[in-house]
Length: 102
Image 1 (cartoon, rainbow, N blue to C red):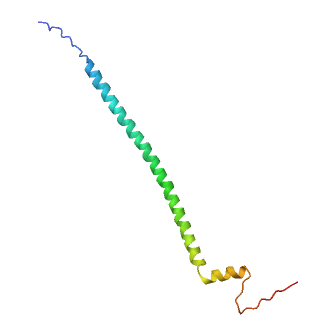
Image 2 (image 1 turned 60 degrees about the vertical axis):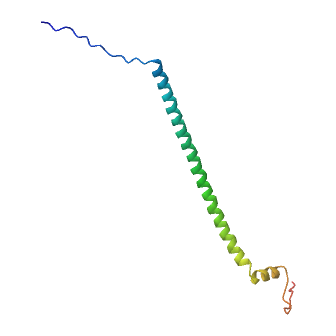
Image 3 (image 1 turned 30 degrees about the vertical axis):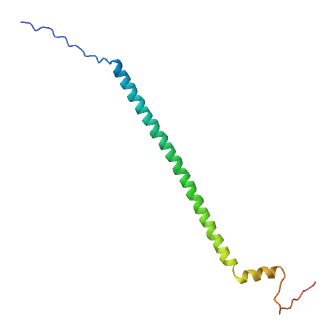
């Protein structure tokens, strides 16, 4: 007895119209998801950059504020006003002014 020839049939996957539509919808949804993720990543990167810039500005303003506070503390006393008055030529009531000429 001889063996009957057995043909191996290759199964071809045949996609129906509904399958194409389903695949297209899935690809569109996945593509939209990827666009959203990359867009959000870009926005997040911009926000991080802006935050770093603003933190630098805050640090600079805090330093300037400290300097101004020190100047205010130094310039708020009576000594400051007396020194400014002497620069303008004012003297105390009981002081005598000598002018030296050449």
